[in-house]
Image 1: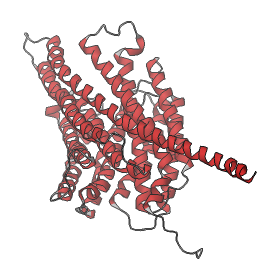
Image 2: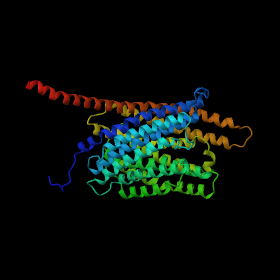
Image 3: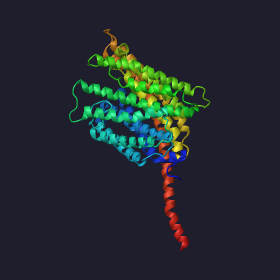
Image 4: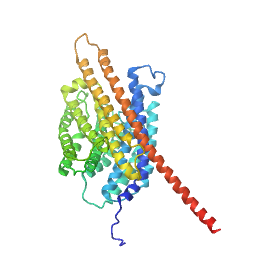
Length: 480
């Protein structure tokens, strides 16, 4: 072959190059998904029976709830997203994954960092900042691991054969740069040797939380949806220009959100956040139009497969965005502030949108990467229904319960006391606990498929190694 000619790789070669990195990322992510949901269940049980874990400091609500949130976000969401991103970059670039050893090392560093951070939170060594509770040592591991995977992704992107960018490229490339920027900035201003003081700490933490939970998850989740929806529905993407418009408006308006309307700050900060939140309706409408018109008229049946996951997750993202806009409205915020409504929006964003989209993407790409079908294909449909029903019960009950709780808190009549607001919320928490349990059962099915595929691949690899070792011995015996 002429050295100036570009080598063309088959899809099987591209998928094979992603096999080990993706298994390292997805295996740990599946484990952390189960662990995070289990910790969430422990946290919510303290509202049903407050003295259940009273003698165990590790399982008090103030420790176990942040540990659960970080295990879900840093343990599952981000490594699962990075694995899906690497595969999409390799496929769109029509080349093998570049520097494939880096993500394997990075995956182990990442999961080690999450383990160190989760244990630190449970033993009381949390930083105290929401979504940034991991101590400095854990943060360094996470940052280094992310940079290694980003180097691999950018190198793969640079080696692409098709120079024209796919709409997913815009979202995923932005996400690669977004996380190091917001994570390093938040750590520098909040956890450095000379952190900022006073109200500025709260502002930076709100900014970081919004950019991580809403903007970063949206960039990766929507970017993955724009790739998988056309492929799974066997239809072309509705509009590249509308996707580009949604991308720019999302990162333009989304970064200014997150400051509560009742925050003790100069009035212009909550007001600017409210205006930016209201303008989020623009990218939400654009994304909804793209998704609906892409899948409309598709002859592909859903039947609980990956297409159903991505469709439901995209709808959940739009609903989560609408809830975020509602929270920014001063009239609504007076009722929903200090209630379960904000928690419902975050849980819908993480579990209803992002987790479901990532699970659908993994179910679609992993059989291609491994070269064989899922060990338990019926689990895919069952998990979809468990997740869908669980998210509706979990996030829905928290949202409705939050509104009821807020109305009680705002009631000035002497007959309504503070305990009434907690009692009315407890009814909805019982329903929500059932939903959370269903999501946990679905995550066990997901982990079973991931671990079974990993075990099957490692067993086949071991047999190949044994056969390779035995073959020279057998040849030597024949010659003798």
